[in-house]
Image (cartoon, rainbow, N blue to C red; front, side):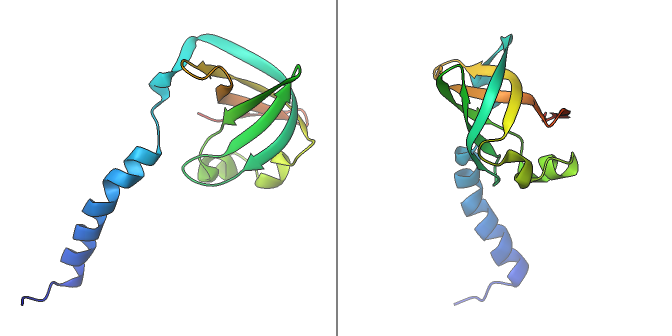
Length: 119
Protein backbone atom coordinates (compact mmCIF):
# COMPACT_ATOMS: atom_id res chain seq x y z
CA UNK A 1 0.00 0.00 0.00
CA UNK A 2 1.28 3.45 -0.96
CA UNK A 3 1.92 5.99 1.83
CA UNK A 4 0.50 9.47 1.25
CA UNK A 5 2.66 12.48 1.96
CA UNK A 6 1.32 14.95 4.58
CA UNK A 7 0.41 17.65 2.03
CA UNK A 8 -1.55 15.23 -0.12
CA UNK A 9 -3.37 13.98 2.98
CA UNK A 10 -4.20 17.53 4.09
CA UNK A 11 -5.62 18.39 0.66
CA UNK A 12 -7.72 15.23 0.69
CA UNK A 13 -9.14 16.04 4.13
CA UNK A 14 -9.93 19.63 3.06
CA UNK A 15 -11.79 18.38 0.01
CA UNK A 16 -13.88 16.05 2.13
CA UNK A 17 -14.73 18.70 4.75
CA UNK A 18 -15.35 21.68 2.43
CA UNK A 19 -18.91 20.74 1.39
CA UNK A 20 -19.98 20.33 5.03
CA UNK A 21 -18.60 23.77 5.89
CA UNK A 22 -20.30 25.40 2.91
CA UNK A 23 -23.64 23.79 3.77
CA UNK A 24 -23.47 25.19 7.31
CA UNK A 25 -23.40 28.77 6.03
CA UNK A 26 -26.27 30.31 4.12
CA UNK A 27 -26.18 33.05 1.49
CA UNK A 28 -27.54 36.54 1.98
CA UNK A 29 -29.97 36.27 -0.97
CA UNK A 30 -32.55 34.84 1.45
CA UNK A 31 -33.05 38.29 3.00
CA UNK A 32 -35.20 41.07 1.54
CA UNK A 33 -32.67 43.89 1.07
CA UNK A 34 -35.36 46.13 -0.46
CA UNK A 35 -36.99 46.65 2.96
CA UNK A 36 -34.56 47.72 5.69
CA UNK A 37 -35.94 47.42 9.20
CA UNK A 38 -34.79 49.16 12.38
CA UNK A 39 -35.33 47.37 15.70
CA UNK A 40 -34.86 48.94 19.12
CA UNK A 41 -34.76 46.61 22.08
CA UNK A 42 -32.68 44.43 24.35
CA UNK A 43 -30.41 41.46 23.92
CA UNK A 44 -31.76 38.28 25.49
CA UNK A 45 -28.92 35.97 24.48
CA UNK A 46 -25.90 36.10 22.15
CA UNK A 47 -23.38 33.83 20.47
CA UNK A 48 -19.95 34.88 19.27
CA UNK A 49 -18.86 31.97 17.11
CA UNK A 50 -18.28 31.03 13.48
CA UNK A 51 -19.63 31.26 10.89
CA UNK A 52 -21.29 34.35 12.43
CA UNK A 53 -22.56 35.66 15.72
CA UNK A 54 -26.24 35.72 16.62
CA UNK A 55 -28.59 37.47 18.99
CA UNK A 56 -31.91 36.59 20.50
CA UNK A 57 -33.28 40.11 20.50
CA UNK A 58 -36.54 41.42 21.95
CA UNK A 59 -38.15 44.40 20.25
CA UNK A 60 -41.75 45.58 20.70
CA UNK A 61 -42.76 42.31 22.36
CA UNK A 62 -41.35 40.11 19.58
CA UNK A 63 -38.25 37.93 19.85
CA UNK A 64 -35.98 37.95 16.79
CA UNK A 65 -33.04 35.82 15.71
CA UNK A 66 -30.52 38.43 14.55
CA UNK A 67 -27.65 37.21 12.36
CA UNK A 68 -24.47 39.20 12.95
CA UNK A 69 -21.04 39.24 11.28
CA UNK A 70 -18.30 36.65 11.82
CA UNK A 71 -16.49 37.07 15.17
CA UNK A 72 -13.18 38.16 13.57
CA UNK A 73 -14.95 41.04 11.80
CA UNK A 74 -16.80 42.14 14.93
CA UNK A 75 -13.56 42.00 16.92
CA UNK A 76 -11.73 44.03 14.23
CA UNK A 77 -14.49 46.65 14.33
CA UNK A 78 -14.35 46.90 18.12
CA UNK A 79 -17.50 44.94 18.94
CA UNK A 80 -16.27 42.40 21.50
CA UNK A 81 -18.53 39.67 22.89
CA UNK A 82 -18.90 41.60 26.17
CA UNK A 83 -20.86 44.34 24.38
CA UNK A 84 -23.48 41.75 23.36
CA UNK A 85 -24.34 40.84 26.94
CA UNK A 86 -27.89 39.90 27.93
CA UNK A 87 -30.01 42.88 28.98
CA UNK A 88 -27.91 45.33 26.91
CA UNK A 89 -30.07 47.70 24.89
CA UNK A 90 -29.32 48.11 21.21
CA UNK A 91 -30.58 49.31 17.86
CA UNK A 92 -30.24 46.87 14.98
CA UNK A 93 -30.73 47.77 11.31
CA UNK A 94 -31.09 44.93 8.84
CA UNK A 95 -33.20 42.83 6.52
CA UNK A 96 -35.87 40.24 7.30
CA UNK A 97 -35.47 36.68 6.01
CA UNK A 98 -37.84 36.00 3.10
CA UNK A 99 -39.08 32.70 4.59
CA UNK A 100 -38.69 33.31 8.32
CA UNK A 101 -40.32 36.53 9.55
CA UNK A 102 -38.54 36.14 12.91
CA UNK A 103 -35.00 36.30 11.47
CA UNK A 104 -33.08 39.46 10.62
CA UNK A 105 -29.67 39.85 8.98
CA UNK A 106 -28.02 42.81 10.69
CA UNK A 107 -26.21 45.44 8.63
CA UNK A 108 -25.30 47.56 11.64
CA UNK A 109 -25.78 47.61 15.39
CA UNK A 110 -25.66 50.49 17.83
CA UNK A 111 -24.77 49.79 21.47
CA UNK A 112 -23.82 52.40 24.07
CA UNK A 113 -24.12 55.15 21.45
CA UNK A 114 -21.56 53.52 19.11
CA UNK A 115 -22.60 52.17 15.70
CA UNK A 116 -20.71 49.24 14.19
CA UNK A 117 -21.08 48.34 10.50
CA UNK A 118 -21.27 44.56 10.26
CA UNK A 119 -21.12 43.94 6.50
